[in-house]
Image (cartoon, rainbow, N blue to C red):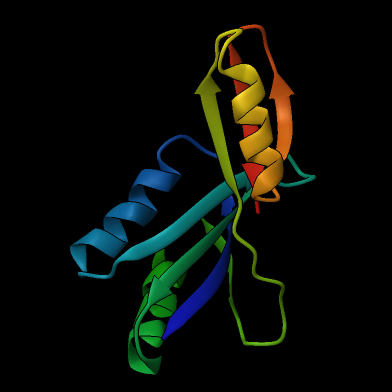
Amino acid sequence: MKHTISVLVENKFGVLARIAGLFSARGFNIDSLAVGETEDPTVSRMTIVSEGDEKTLEQIKKQLNKLIDVIKVVDFKEGEFIDRELMLIKVSVSAKTRKDILEAVNGIGARLANAGSKSLSIEIS
């Protein structure tokens, strides 16, 4: 079963490496990882998706709470959050291929995020 965990950490050099190392050293896999600064520039939020049973999840939470740079660990339960995936693709284009690529983007329900003279950034959600 996949679990989504939100971790508030101090926004310092090396914190991401320590947390990734914790997962690696204990044989836990990170399926997805997103990190960003919060409203407070001294704090970052890490959103981690990992797979495992309830026992594995408890071990992950206990190990995370032992780290000095970790402020708070929250396990999101099903129904408490919205889960979406987003893909951004940057494609090189020429004058000949631009029209075909734009038609393909519209055909699959994607959205053009940015258009440059030599590339297109495409958003698929």
